Image 1 (cartoon, rainbow, N blue to C red):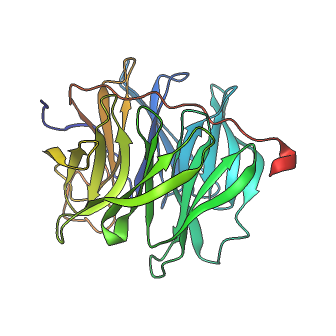
Image 2 (image 1 turned 180 degrees about the vertical axis):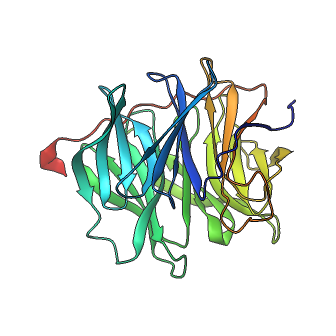
Image 3 (image 1 turned 120 degrees about the vertical axis):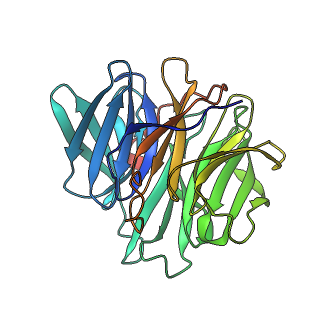
Length: 293
C-alpha cells in the first residue's frame, strides 16, 4: 500500500514542525521552531524557499480571506506570505496568560473554521499544557493538564477531535459537535514503552489517523477505532508531523527534527511517502471580531 519515504529536502531543521499544504501558493509550508524559520517547498517545479523570523513560529494555518494565522512565541498573529515576502500583521492573542517559559505547540482547524491549538512548558518539565479553541466566542480553554500537547486532528466527518499528550504516549479522542464543544474525552491510543511518542498527526479521507512517532523512527496509520493499520519506517528517529499535500492531496509529507540526532545524516529532512490514500483539505481559520478577543 505504500512506497518507501523519499527525501524531498535535506534541510536539517532543528525542530521541523507544523506542515500544511497551501492551495494559494501551491506549496508545502513548515516551520523550524528552534531556528525561528519558515520554509516552503514547491513540488510542481521542485523549488525551495526559506524566511527568517523575528521570533519562533510554532505553526501556520490558512486564514479565511487570504493569508495565514501563525502561532508565535508572543501569541497568535496574522501573517502574509506572497511575492513581496513575509509580513507579520495584527497580533490577535498575546500569551501573557501563560506561565513564563510556556509556548504554543501545534494547531489545527475544524470544518467550521475554528482554530484549535495547544500550549506546553517549553522545557517539558512541568505538566501545565492546555488545549484552546479560538472562534467567534473568543479564546477559550477546552482541556488542561497536558505534559506535551500535539496534534490536533479532526476526523473527516468533523465529529471527532484527536489530541496528543506526547510525553505520556497517549492520543485522546473527543466528540466534537457543530457548536465546537468537546465531550466524551477518552484514551484512544496508548503506545507501548519504547514505541515512540505520538507527535503531529493528520486524518486521511477514509478516517485513518496518521501519526509521526518521535523517537520511533516511523509514521503509523490507525483505524478510526484506534487499531493499528500499518507503519512506514523512516531513515530518521525523530519524525515530528505529517500532512497531505499536492493538487489532489494524495502526497503525504513528513517533517523531522535534527536535535539530538547528530549521527543521522537525514535528520531534520522533509520526506514524502506514497500512501495511495488522499487527505482532507484544511479549512481556513475564520478569525473572530476584535471585540471577542
